[in-house]
Structure formats: C-alpha cells, structure tokens
Image 1 (cartoon, rainbow, N blue to C red):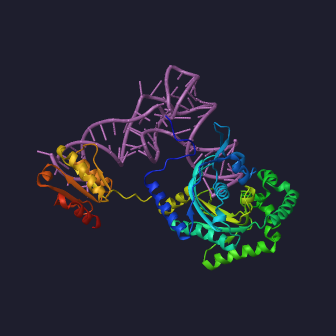
Image 2 (tube, helix red, strand yellow):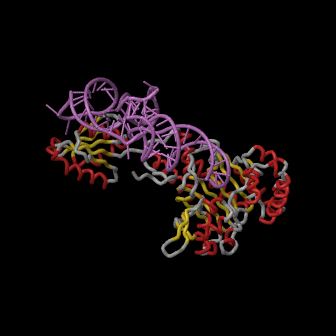
Image 3 (cartoon, chains in turn purple, cyan):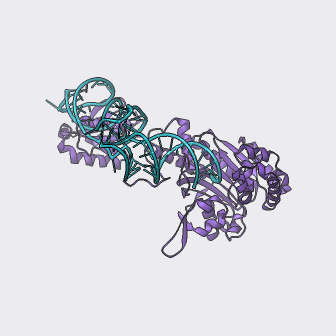
Length: 420
RNA sequence: GCGGGUGUAGCUCAGCAGGUAGAGCCCCAGAUUGUGACUCUGGUUGUCGCGGGUUCGAGCCCCGUCACUCGCCCCA
C-alpha cells in the first residue's frame, strides 16, 4: 500500500472547513491593513536560501529539500518565505514603484525534519512583509497585523514577546563580549551549548538547559550594548504597543535563528502545544535586501505557522465545528423520476442553491436518512404522484413539516424554508 | 540526527501460560411495500504495521525495519 509521505498530511472535511474560515479572516484582516497578496513559486534556486537565510542555520544546513533538475540547476523546495518575497521585490523593483510595499502570503513550506505534533515536513505559513520603512511605526504595524489576525481567527491562549537585537554593529560588539564570558564558563555549559558557542552563541541565551540558564544569569545584557538610535527605535515600538493596549513582555534573552534579523524581533508563543511553543515569529531584517544583491531597503515582517494555529483553535474549541450541509437534498422516489429529478436539481443549483442528489438509487427511507446525515436544510421529493400532479414535496428538515407545492413555485418555496 | 512510548476492523479499544481474532461505535438492509430519532433483527469489514527468526503452532516471544507519538536539537 502506498501511504502519504512522512511528515505530510491530507487536509479535508471539518478541519479543512476551519482552515478556509481562517483564510477568510486572513484576507479580511490583511485587507484592513492595506496588504496585498503575493504568490511566489514553490521552487527557488538553492542559492537564494543559502545567501538569504544563512549557511550556518539548521534550515540551510540540514533541513532543505534540495535536488538538481534536468538542466543541472540546484533547486530547493522553499523552507521559508521571506527570502523569496525579497527576491521578488528586488527582481520586480517593487519598492521603487511603491515606496511602502505591503505584502502578505499563505502557502506550503518544506523542511526535512523529524515530525512532531505541530511540526511537519510540509507545513503552511501565513505571513506579511512591510518593505520600505525603517521607522518604528512599520514594526508596530506588522506586530498589530499578526495579533489582530490571530484574534480574528478565534484563538486567545497565546502571548507576545518582543526584544531588540539592535543594529548589526552593536550586536557584533555584544557578541564578542558574550563569547568571551561564555568561554570562561565553558565547563558549566551543556554539550549543545558548547557546540553553539561556535555556530550561534546568541542562542545560548534562551537555552532550555537549567545549567545553561544558570550561566546565562551572569552574562552581559545585549541591551546594554545598544547604541542610542537602536534603543530609541525599540522604545518607540513598545510605546505604540502600549498605546494600542496590546499586552506583551520584553524578553531580553530572545534571539531569532535566522541570520538576517536586526532591531525588533518578536515571537507569539503558547503553552498549549508542547515543545512547539512558537506560533509566530518575526522581526526587522534591514540587511537582507543587500545580502541578496538589491539596494538596501528596510523591511519588517512575520510568519505564522498555520498548523500550529489550527491545533490551538481545535484545542480551545474542543474540536472542529461541523461544516454546513447542503441547502437541499433532492429525493427521487421512483424510477421514472430519475431524469426529471436530476434536471430539477440543476434548476435549483442555477438559482444559487447547493443541492445533493442520490446517486445510489436507494430507497426513499435511505435517502431521507442521508439528507439528515448531511444536515440538509430542505428535502425536495419527486416521485410518480408528484409528476402526475406537476408538484413536488418540500420538507423542512428541522421541523419535519412538509407540503406539496406546484413545480413552478419550487424555488420560491424552498427559499421560504431556507429562512425558517 | 539522538532518547522514550505505541502500532489488532473505517474509528475507540479488548485479547493471552504462545492454540488458527473480538466488542462498542460507524456503515448496509429489513421490521415501517414513499420519510430522519429510538428500539429490534440480520449483515459487511482485518495481509493483527512490514520482514525475518524461535516453535508442532506466534497478534502474543526474539531480531530487524517502517510509521505514529512524546521529549532533545531546531523552528512556524
């Protein structure tokens, strides 16, 4: 038997209906903020991610689906969306045409990781990028858009954490100090953190290891190394959040894994998903345009893991709400009515109603049971008697009341029951 | 990539000192010859994850493997 590929899943039924509702919220909220959808291909040149995301990151180092195509090009199934969006912005000169370019996206991403709850090899992210502004209002707008969307989707068990990494220069100075401090305490660090000392020392700051946390307590603080402009920028972002009444905490130990961040970084986290506690990650990435060969352009964005959001939604609501049934179940009560009933269904559909018919040539009893199971609003029955009199039976399923009506009045009569 | 747990019907699960597989739900038909619930009657459903080994005999024991799951790493 051929099964689904590991780490990937089918989406259907009530769960898919819930996704579609969430997508509706996403469209409405992004529209309210003036963001336009942007769709990029699922495949990009591998080089884009190597340069954009960073060779030292786990994403590029061990998680990419990379292959060579028939022409010999190295292509990669996109593992994140910011680099492709920036690639597109540079390639199409978007920011020149529109000095503030506001984009959102929703689509599948691929990372070759060990699957876990809330972590899949094909997963989906909704995200937004605000390109062109270096000012704190842009950072705040992005954070507000993320928060408004999550609230609109209907979840509440999450919290916002923010931090600043400052300018690249101030962070480099801090990094040197941190490495010096940690190196002098290397015996107290976990094996993972000793390794991180080389690859990504800032990450040791938010290590889960208790011994590491003990060492980190005495470490120098990044914030103390920031220049005045960086502090002012961060202060302004927090000021807007305060004024807007958005609750958040400043987490001085939060760092982000990808190379391209600068200044504001933030995460939206939850306690309800085990070790996959991040449902949203984002921040400012002013260096990225230049890294990818474009003219320097300030930018800030976020991405939200849809699977994790939907898991939260399911947990908070105790399951998926059943999808709505069809408006009408058309019951065929005789062999002679078979063709006419199909045509009746078509007539109702052209009037804008959703209509399901029986395709198994089953008994009336079985068809009524089916109409009930599908949660149809109305059942319309056509049989020999009805055809004789040019009538149909219209039944309001919820009240169980039914009546004969002239064929010519069918649509109007069904509409009456739809409102009841 | 590393460590723990679990794999039996579509779903939830039972099974035993190793003796040729069960329940509930679901689904189907009928009781009700053109009407949903409930009830009753009858019925369908399995390579016991896969491969190998031990044994007269393996769902059960052993080895391997795959998948799922929890944690680590990392991240959405």
